[in-house]
Amino acid sequence: MFSKHVSSLSSAYCHDEISPEQSRRVAEHLISCRRCRREFEEVRFGARLAAHLPLIESPDSLWGGIEIALYGNGRTVLPLPRKRIIPYLMQPRFALASLALVVLVTGLATFWLRQNKSPLKSGETMGPFWDVARLNGAPRIGSALVGDKAKLGVGQWLETDTTSRAQIIVSDIGQVEIDPNTRVRLVETKPTEHRLELAQGRLSARISAPPKLFFVDTPSGVAEDLGCAYTLEVDKAGGSLLRVTMGWVSLQLKDRESVVPAGAACATKPGIGPGTPYFEDASEQFRVALSSVDFERDMGDYVALGIVLSSARVRDTLTLWNLLPRVSSPERPLVYDRLAKLAPPPPGVTREGVLKLNQQMLDAWKEQLEFRWANSSPSGPLKAWAKVWARGLGKLNGVAGKK
Amino acid sequence: MLEQTAIHAEQLVQSSPDSINSGVIQACQQGDREAFRLLFEAYKDRVFSIACYSLGDEAGADDVTQQIFVKLFTCIGQFRGESEFTTWLYRLVINSCLDERRRRRRFLPVEEFTPMTKAVHTKPAETRYERREIAGSVREAIGGLKPKMRLPILLKYIEGLSYEEIAAVLGCSKGTVASRLNRAHKALAKKLGHLRGELEL
Image 1 (cartoon, rainbow over the protein chains, first blue to last red):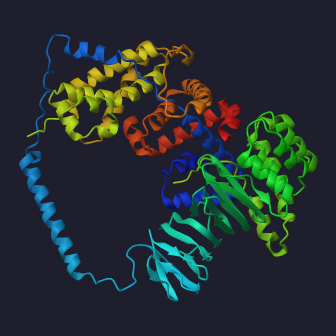
Image 2 (cartoon, rainbow over the protein chains, first blue to last red):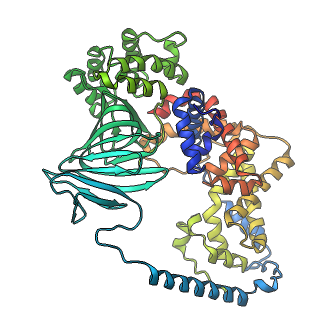
Image 3 (tube, rainbow over the protein chains, first blue to last red):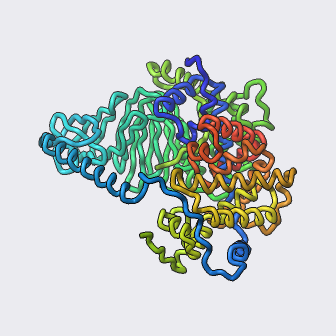
């Protein structure tokens, strides 16, 4: 835990106005400090409100008043502004001479560098890159076959066919395995951001890094790593399915975000973004109805929501808690009542407050529910990891969007 | 030899801050009336918006905006290019608004905005109703902020300036800008907490 709180940097962090090193420090601190996280969420909410400040259209008569003030005496051209005394050395002839000198020096330097630069070896890329290893078959980077080892440069595509697989080493923070019939592109790799694009197919990522460092772009959302292992699959329609095996992953598209814990999954659809997270051992009836709630139903259609609520188990409180801010105001009491019956809220969390989406009450309830979600995970060896991350994170819907 | 800026009717319609280059500014400094008009069209809504939010009434904002542009056109020769033109411009705007407020020695509530105030719409009709509701609440909340917090918010969200640019306009440090924006965001969140549900959808 960092000894110095970071809440004073919240706005600057939101607006990306701090250095990469500071940004990492803030991100790491927010995982473990509930107080700073709460303040950050407050600042971020305020920033989202301020973003709604409208530009006010000026009246049409404005120019007329200015014209009268400027040209009211009948002149058609304004008097020239008072000439300023240009310092001797700033006169154009000296500026031109300086410019010529700069061009000459730059040209000589460029010429010298080109003469002394060794040519690229075959297969080498310029600029940042990730190491790629062939696991099976014949994966390709562009048109070149990947041997035992290769390099994937920024902007390059890695493709696998029906039998090939590959492994990408993501800088110094983890690795990604690429399944058959998959196309991925390295979008960015720098100390503050590592980003892949998954156009189609499936990848499995295992990342050990602070949050907001590793991203995967898909046609229907951005998967943001929060320190975890997961698989992400994109179908031909551009929809995707995220399955988290360790830690947490955030899926985002514009203002819509879902934070998915270990053992859970979340689907996304193009133009809509992420749906509501759910545990994969939920009944098929539950999952089909949830898909309808997320992507297909019309406003006022309570049938699908009713099925979700009636078939929910204690473990499915993950889904119900995430539905609270997503459903309409008339539907929210239904979700609350079912959630409260399965897992009564802790002291201090009131029905009225939750229905008004009081952030502190929602966070408090989630903290209590996360323990159930972590302990109900089917995977024994992953319980310890799930507990650590469940206690460490409290992120709710946010504003980060797809690039 | 300075270039003459050829201004066509279409340019006036499409005029935006992005279209204002050094050639237009130099033409203004030479007294080119059409260049002045181009500059005016590019910045009129932004300057008017800041005046509205600073002063709290449209009629007053109208007068101040005219004064700002008249001052701009007559003093543009003093712009030496040592800073960004926008920094120079917005410093002029902020100082003019502060001078007007000092002259009035009062702050009119935002409720006195006339119903004819038109926001510049960029969203589809079906989302405009909700956004108008939120925008109205935000505008009212902004009007209740102290000037030290209100001005950085306006420069950030109306003008889209960076922290460094805001600091240059206000004559303070970047850290001070960050601190004031932090306080302003928290103040807005506290006042408009009831809108959290609407923003989450």
